[in-house]
Amino acid sequence: QLIFIYILILIHTGNFNCYIKAVPDEVLLLICSYLQEKELCRMAQTCTRLNSICQDGCLWFVVNELNFILHYIDKYGWL
Image (spheres, helix red, strand yellow):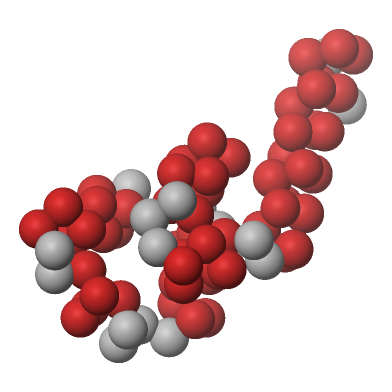
């Protein structure tokens, strides 16, 4: 979450483009993998590059799988 806050500060100060270009896609994908669904959607709205990173199918597979598990536990209790 600290990385997410740091990125938001960079966006707000206008220095975002300089730093984000230096970060490889794989690292951004790893950072985004720690975000929840709502945070991932917000991150996607920050810039074009992060939008394409946040649309990666692997991220949404994990989000959907987690939502399914949480729904199952809520409905049926623990496995």
